[in-house]
Length: 311
Image (cartoon, rainbow, N blue to C red; front, side):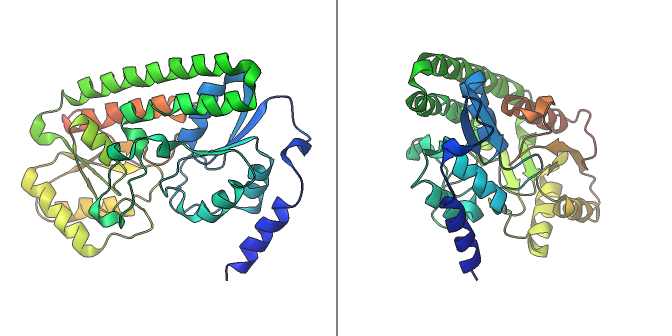
């Protein structure tokens, strides 16, 4: 059953070269998979790059499959940037094939392996959600600048200056995250979401993280998972849990009901961004804006302040 996609890919790869893009305006055309990676490319490339993200707001990269249009965009790209570490699992074959024909960089794989998380239930692979440890994500702008400089050497200094500035702003947000999460009482620093996208956040900022579905949303939470986590919430008197913008809220709603059936009220503390950014033109439509939203939403709810229903 894999023959048809492979044939489509082969036909598109043979269809021309990147330079035949009728919309070419002299800028580098950078095609990215996720919003986080696309925002990284825009910040480092500035006005010298034209960036396109294949996955928009609310899109789950674990389940995303490349369309024929996506393959065409990748074929025309001057540079392909993706997260890597198997985040874009169903695009693996396409990205691997493109890597033989286009400059391609997996930005999460720039992080030293010793600093990656490798949960026991992830079958020997690394957790791909490295952007939630800001100290680690601050390592990615410089290599992206190097890739752009190799393609556009006349503006190499500009790319590297922008990369340094962006890394500095990420570092500043890292400090903000540490200070803000420190305001949550230690016993309440427990983050409960639909899937384990936040383990790097937990390690970096002192949160215990519990997810119903594991690292990949390709697995479904069973009844036993819901009941076990409900018991944990009641025992620890956890004040809030969170829905994610790129994951169905169904499992979290089931967990909320299971907790209520035990005589304890846990509220949805808000909506957080895990694998996708927010809408373009909003603060959450940028990486740093998304991260700050999560920091503020999670910390306030765990302190018992405010909170609102997710979608």
